[in-house]
Length: 443
Ligand code: ASP
Image 1 (cartoon, protein in one colour):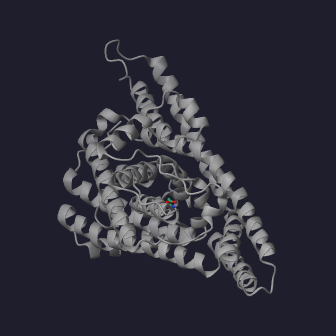
Image 2 (spheres, protein in one colour):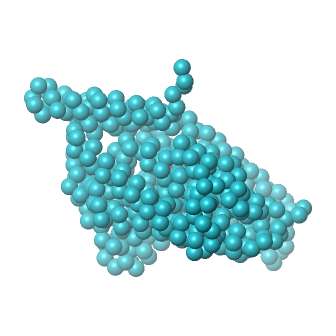
Image 3 (cartoon, rainbow, N blue to C red):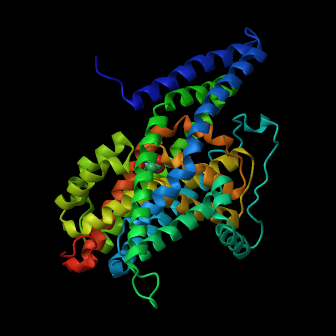
């Protein structure tokens, strides 16, 4: 018999959770089964789900830290990156920002969480307040910016305070690279020993990242149990109502992804790369299908490289732009983070003003940069964005129930956006001078 893959198990777990929970909910409403008992079943479901979530959370700090540090050090000599590096980063941030904007507009338009009762308010915590400062947009941004600079990076890590951790990790990565390439101290010149030590440190973080990815993938194998638990909780506790809200939420993410993938990115391809989006899509088909089925941009990377080169991008460009993109450029993930957090805020009955939505948008951008290109990494990062606006992280469990299918869609958009970046950068790099492209300079 063919071995079932993880996404099949997740689907089965969803069906099982709903299959047990829904009838119980209906029978409890009719009075055939003791309503208290059904609520107890729902709480057991939640407890099971939470157990899975805890393991996932445990991975957050080391995964994000090592992903960012090795992402930055992997760029090599930062000074040699020059304009190509700058342009690539700019493109990545700009398309992710466009994706987030699309998501924010869509979630405000559809309002999937308004009026939905997913049982979150019965946690005893009451309605949470949004702690991201209220009022003036500039004040809000200023206080977020201040909060990003850790007074003690180790405390930030131990408190799971992700934004300062992201800030510190990027800075650490930059300085490891500077020291390794003898550029940290222009006055006193190169220090061969420091450079060798920095290279060792770089390898340490690369190793840590490789191990953390494997560990995350192992924990993700348990996802069906978590999904079953949360599905049971939602179905037994809230019945069809829960599904309506979750369905609307999933539809919102999906529609926003469709707009970004079918309108925004093709326009970018046409306008900046001067290529036919259709021809490009045709060449990219194998990579896009793989991204969809594996939900991993990292896993798809070799195929993304080949397809992009088939689409006419020189390998000198693709070999720099794509590995970096698989780590930091995640339009789909950024969009999804923003939509999910605003959805959760809506479920809590909170009306976020412009400044607060801006904080969500910015944090979503950073979270997508910090997310690793593996399945469900986006939900690990969700905790970051929720914490940034002061929302409880328990709600992540609920959206986990429908996460796999959304992960498949957003990963496809992540890879699609990386490939569009490669086309645009190739055009601007012209016939790239090998020395300008890291990793291709003659030894
Ligand atoms: N699975 C996504 C990727 O590999 C990341 C995410 O979970 O959003 O690109």
